[in-house]
Image (cartoon, rainbow, N blue to C red):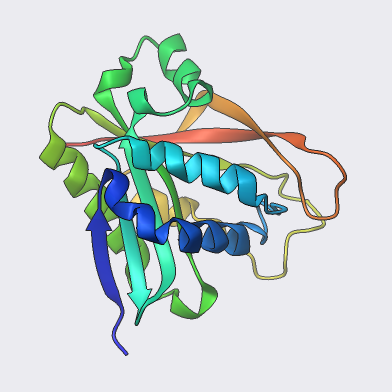
Length: 198
């Protein structure tokens, strides 16, 4: 069956929130995030995106099953943890459209959906108007981390081909519990930026 890609904004995503939470937990369990899923956190996180009428959810559907998803939101509508690096660099929050994540089940990778997720979110930001930048952040691990699976490849090359530039001095920190841990730990995430009109 062909994969359908749909987009929705704000509260229109409500029927899919449970599926999105489960998908995020499943995909982020893998390296490099190693996230021990928290259903309550997922509900809060996704509901906050749904409350923004200018948010975007790009969903990949196999039949009725959500097999991939990607999110975006005006940075000004997102949490304070993501604001500080931009404020420290004199950037206006209103200039930035922030990409939350792209998650896709293994069986559906390599079919161009990653590019489609970026295309749809960038188009949404242009349609809204007023944004100069698109941005996202990603966790970084030590290259020698023993938990890195054999054959692992980061997404850096893919992101660079999309025109995103790794920022040497823009980071945020988020807490989450890794698989097998008893308590959350602090993780550093690096920002990548691209001029929207590039």
